Length: 194
Ligand SMILES: C[S@@+](CC[C@H](N)C(=O)[O-])C[C@H]1O[C@@H](n2cnc3c(N)ncnc32)[C@H](O)[C@@H]1O
Image 1 (cartoon, rainbow, N blue to C red):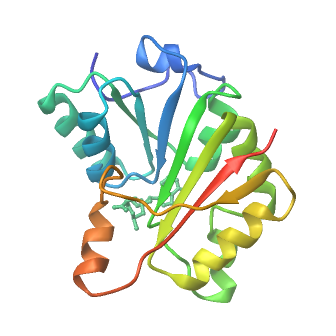
Image 2: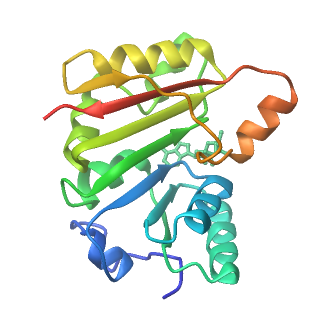
């Protein structure tokens, strides 16, 4: 099965089985870029299914051709806007872990409305995740980190947990660039509260 997931209909929901051909749960990388994190995690954890969401066609093509070349059966990539996918295309309760790594920080106040994590986005993530599912967030931008922590915990749907990512948590392409510049990385894990 090729890595590219091209839905026959963009106006209905899909279960993990339809996307991957088998299985009930998966992990999703929102804004997966060129797929460095996605492909490394999929290589290391062949039993887990990894779905990359990305809006840029060139990046999705790169992820798919790399996954196909590596012969990875547990990777799919879909060109779509992240919120639309979570709100309208995935069956509720499907995602075990949601990764949101080094997103564009939209630092200017007048641009904050472009950030994915907003008050009304929290119930969208909550619905898409499995019971006890996790939302994992990493950024080099401290103010964006504080923003995401505040919005995610605000209405009691998620609980922040201690998390110090180790070697098992792959480095992303953007992370490599930031760390080479000596910038700090902020990480947070939130668990879905039923
Ligand atoms: C700064 S890059 C980080 C890429 C990757 N996560 C990493 O750490 O290397 C952000 C990525 O998110 C994608 N993106 C931004 N907003 C998006 C959205 N609403 N839906 C899907 N992809 C989005 C961008 O096209 C870009 O590839």
